[in-house]
Image (cartoon, rainbow over all chains, first blue to last red; front, side, top):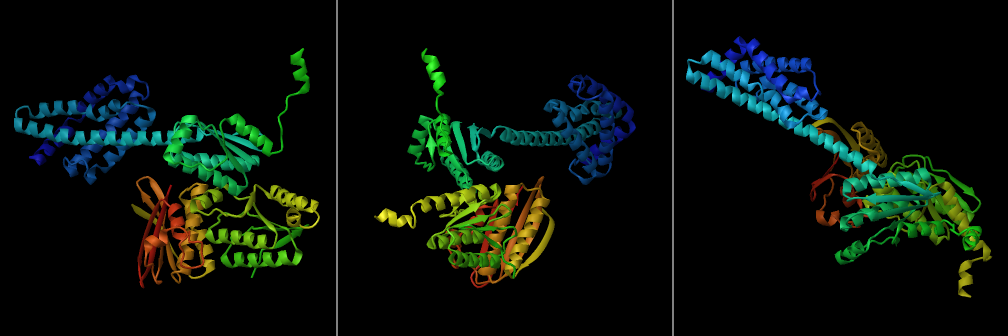
Length: 292
Length: 133
Length: 134
C-alpha cells in the first residue's frame, strides 16, 4: 500500500508541478516570513522550486522514506535553508512552515487526480504526509542545533566580556568577578588574569568576588588554582569582597581558602600599595584648607 | 653533548633556557649549576624560563632539586618568566615547585636576589651568627 | 567518531620523548586548540611518553585527530610491552611512584586530559589513551 501511495504522489508531483508550485508560492507569500522582510520573494521562490525538484527526485527512487539516500540532496538543501533561517532570526514556526505549507497544494493536486479513487487518494495523502512530516521535523532539528550553536558562541563571548582585568596602579591589577563561576568560565578568567599579569608586569593581582553569589568547594578550588598559578609566575594574589554570609557558608561547608583575603577591594588595594612600598597620605595643604 | 650556558654576574648565576629541554640536558644543567655554585661561591641562582613552552614533572623536579641543592650551598634560587599556560598546566598537574621563589621577569628576579645579598651584606659576614648572639 | 589523521611514533629514547612533544604540538595547533589546552595536552603526552620509556621499557604512541559531530579532538594512545601495572588504582594516586619520579605522571596526565583510559596486564604491557577536545 505504501508503494502505491508513493506512486500516486509521484504522479501528482510530476503531472501537476506547475499548479502545485503556484499554490505553494501563494501560501508562502501569505506566510509571515516575507512580511518580516528578512527574505525576498524571488529568493523564497528559488528555494521552493529547488526543494520541489529534489523532493520529486527523492521520491522516484527512495519511496516515502525521507531518510533514504535518494533524499540526501534534499535533506542537505533543507538543512542549509534551515540553518540560515536560524541565524537570520526567523521564528521556529516560519522555518517549519516552509515545508508544511507544501502539504495543502499537494493534497489539492492529489484530490484533483484521484477524486474518483478513494483508496488511491488516501494512500497518496498518507505518503505525502509521511514524507513532509519527516522533512519538517528535520528542518526543526537543524534549526535548533543552529540556535544552540549561536547560544554557545554568545556564551563564550559573554564569558570573555564579563571578565575585565583593570589596572589599579603600576603593577597592581584587579579582577572584579561578577556572576556564577563554572569551570569553563573560570578557565577564561584565569587565562585573562594571568596574561594581564604578564602584559602589565603586575606584582599583585586583586581578585574581587563581591559579585559572586555563592562560593562552593568547586569555586574555591578554582580560585586557589588561579592564585597558585599566579604565584608560579611571580605574582601575588589577594582575594577581596567575601561577603559575611558567604564567609559563613564557606566555614559551614568546610571550604578552606588559604589565601590572603581582605573584606573590601579598598582594603586589598591598601595592602597592595603597602606591599609595593607605597603609602597613601592626605595632603597637608588640603587638611589645613578644610580647617579654615 | 650541548649544554646550557651559565652566566655569572656578581654573586649571581644566571641561566636562560631557550631550547626544548630533553632529559639529559636537564640533568647536565643540574650538575653544572651545583659545581658552579661551589666554585664561585654564588649566593643566588636565577633561572629564566620565558621561552619554555612546557614544564612537565621531570623539568619541574629538576627545578625543585636545583633549588634544594642551592639552599644547602647557601644560594637562593629564583625562577623567572614562567608563561601563563605553563603555570596553569603545572597547577593542574599538581606540581607546586615548593621552595622556589618566582619572579615575573629577569629584572624582578635579579632585584630579589640582590635584595637578599644587600640584606645579608649589612650584617658583615653571616647573618645566622648574628641571630645566635 | 571518525579518525581523520593518524600517525605512530616510537618511544625508545629521551630524544623520542622530545619528538613526541613536538609532534603533539603540531597536531594540537592543527585542530585549533587554544594555547593553554595545547600546553596541557603536550605536558600530558610528555608525562606518558616518559612513563612508557622508564617503566614500560619503551614502546610507541599513536597520535590521532578524531572528529565527533562538529567537535575535533586529539587522541593519543601510548602502548608498551613492559611489566605492566599490578595495581592501577594505586598507580593513579598522586605521589605514588615505583621509580624515581614525583609520581604525578598518571594522575597528572588524567587531570590534563578530557578523557583518560588505562588498561594494563601484569607481564603483558600497558596501554594508556588520552584525549583532549576542542
